[in-house]
Image 1 (cartoon, helix red, strand yellow):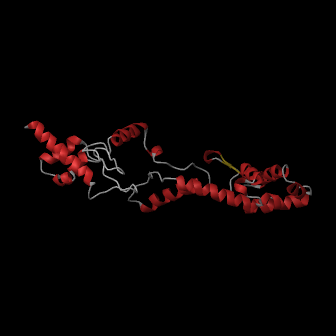
Image 2 (cartoon, rainbow, N blue to C red):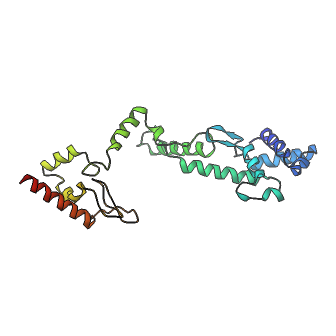
Image 3 (cartoon, rainbow, N blue to C red):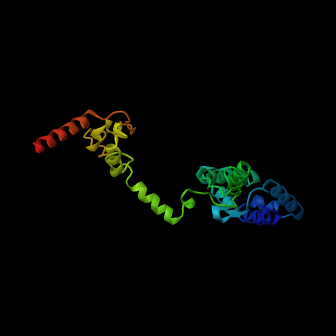
Length: 232
């Protein structure tokens, strides 16, 4: 923020806090206060519409005493309050940010790294909104991705389409995937109830990778016996 932004901000704070109003009553004192604030908040934007930041809103939240903070009852707003508010906002932006794929050649490590750093700096200073993975995929790519994810976990062989698994089985490849054939039936275990094709889970929700519940194995054995009996 520059001096004009600071002057407007302090005038706004003066409308709700007589302590600020007194510091702005004397022209010499007001000028000194504005200069001090401008130096302290030089890296804080007045507004950043794309990221939802507005310094005036931060001033208002301070006096609204959000989160039970009663500092405003004892202290007029100071630059460090806005620095803390901006730091929290910036941290939330960076937590949501996902680096987009740089346009630079990956073999040019200097340019590639510089583009990532510049993008992060733009987000951290409020000049650009956080990047996200959906923005990196065009509408056609999003549709293709959704179609591929639609069948995950629902096929008899987890994470593999049925026709691919059948082709690999016929060629003798990936035969070890049949190590848990009981995945083809639902698990009747009371704390699991995994659907067909899904791994069993422990009571804590952890997926069992090396075995299945005894009740599921028995149900699978019963289903095989019934199929053989029907065939006979």
